[in-house]
Length: 101
Image (cartoon, rainbow, N blue to C red):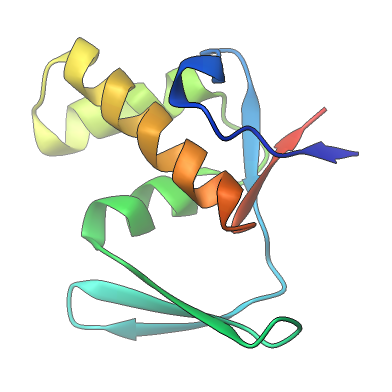
């Protein structure tokens, strides 16, 4: 079962997001192109959104993803948590990730 969570405030640090793996993925410089053949939609993710989506493999919690972003980008935890939750919310709305329940 999967759930879409749009609001960044609704993402709890213990939730476990999982990327949708049925998309065609093409790296393009610092960005990543995702093509959803079923809907015909194309999505372009920046470097940070691509990294966060990559970490959303169904085994890491939101808190663990935040920790990885803090370590990789040398940002404070509060900023990382806000940004990660915001990006997860957007990715969820676009059906690029799901919440594993």
